[in-house]
Image (cartoon, rainbow, N blue to C red; front, side, top):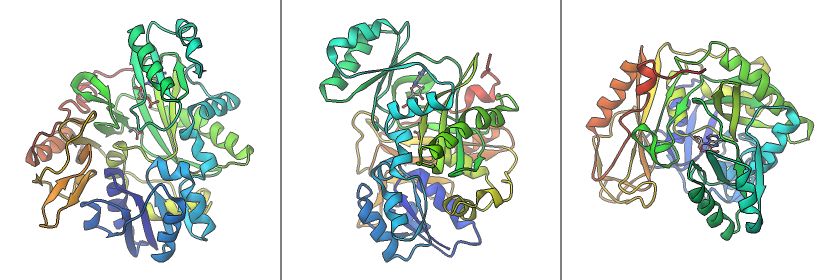
Length: 418
Ligand code: AMP
Ligand code: GLY
């Protein structure tokens, strides 16, 4: 099977690495990729925002299966274009990708499916903002109702800050979503879906704030680990039954069946799991940890989802133990990442590339905010952390920063659900 992966992050590097271990895979390509993906797959340029260009690239390369990593091409309709070209595609249609592309659509689907989620209100008119804000608090959750790469959300106990964030969004023409605050630890559950059948992966947790102890602004994600030693034993079964399957069934009933990866971002509250958000693709950086533990060949799994045959796929097999991934970010990330710095010490195969490129002189340099995703594994979370941070210490990138506390509280048994 010839597999083309669309995207250029560490998530795509992790997918390619997993795909390369599948005996049914015969050739791998990545577009546009990065310096790390180029070591495991042929590299091609492509404008990921242009569905026609993505489909043309797939046809030219004679792909049997296209795996689309990021949300932007999915929301733009890249999967529709690839399927229209007669090629199997792992990733939802534009209509189904709205579950991520529009938070208002996601809320409406959840309401129709009876899925527990935060109460939300959309504000479009600035004159109605203050009255709306007064119906929320003492912790305000203010979101951009469109794709914002995880950076459009402000969670704050400061009403003035909440108001200011909402006003900036409104002044830029973005509808604002206000939400009630969900308390409790967060979990990410990824499910492979073929329109009807749901196959859950191991639950993971990611770290969205830039600094240790969750200080500073939200980012695309600074680290992750899987599975969750503190989670109730029936968590995955419970979430599939009460949240994922009802949403998959609701989308199918609307004629917009979801095929691809449905990602539920959850808060495990005292009232049970509630949805914070849905994403229409693998999460980054959780994928880097989750796939490090998957034993089942992934090309056949993704192909089964793309061809509607998941019900006949054998149960997934996993390695014992834990995986931790730590993101190494560029100086200035997330506000103003500096690029062009030389990276050394990142040759280990467990060091996945995100914002990197190979310079003409052969040096690997930073080319984005999140630069590397370092993966460690071990029989305990503590060992997996030590493995990851040992590899992190070998990397040199001037001005870079990373969190030192990824999975630390979970390893010490300090994460609990009430
Ligand atoms: P999102 O982009 O919707 O995933 O939001 C980014 C982060 O903001 C989430 O991972 C949560 O940490 C936080 N967040 C979003 N919505 C809520 C909510 N309703 N209650 C509590 N925290 C939230
Ligand atoms: N890990 C968060 C995301 O992929 O959106």
